[in-house]
Image 1 (cartoon, rainbow, N blue to C red):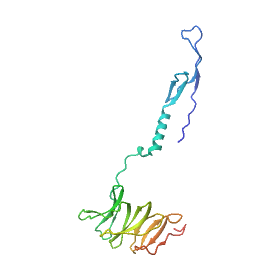
Image 2 (cartoon, rainbow, N blue to C red; image 1 turned 90 degrees about the vertical axis):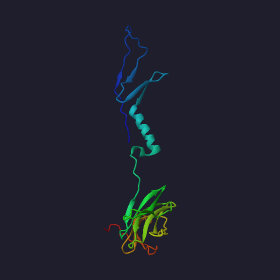
Image 3 (cartoon, rainbow, N blue to C red; image 1 turned 180 degrees about the horizontal axis):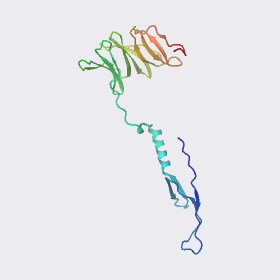
Image 4 (cartoon, helix red, strand yellow; image 1 turned 30 degrees about the horizontal axis):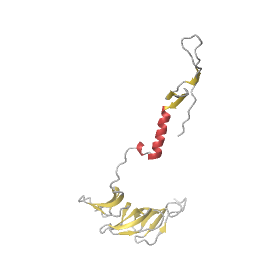
Length: 213
């Protein structure tokens, strides 16, 4: 945002004539204070210093934004619990992501009993779970070692298998009814659609050609 200060209208003040009751030591010339303007006199020279009250406020605000970002202008955000829930195809369980310390772990919830079980314990950021058609496994995205890849976890034993190993990001997995896993990847010049088998084989890019609906 750019602020433009317009010059204030100037009015010349004349010293009183000789013989008047007031004695003028010198002739003064200064502009009338504008709205929101503060005038103060320099202690040594007697000159006038002008300060915009709102200008000081803008400066302080700019410093706060630079140091702490804009969060102080926003209300506190709610906690991300029960995030991105996905119901198993057999309807018996719901998987979701919830914070555990600085990590996001996957949890299983049984709607019939209300019981909750922590599924992952890897201390990473895990999200976007998607169930296998037979409700036995779950594919999800996980950020580890400054990279995001896809992992598959057994819903009973909790055993994990790394599905993708590319240096680019692989996200948004979706386990299809045909057993193939669809996901987005930035491994090309743009985000594209890929498919892979649950065992990590037969990786292929299936995005339609540019301009094709």
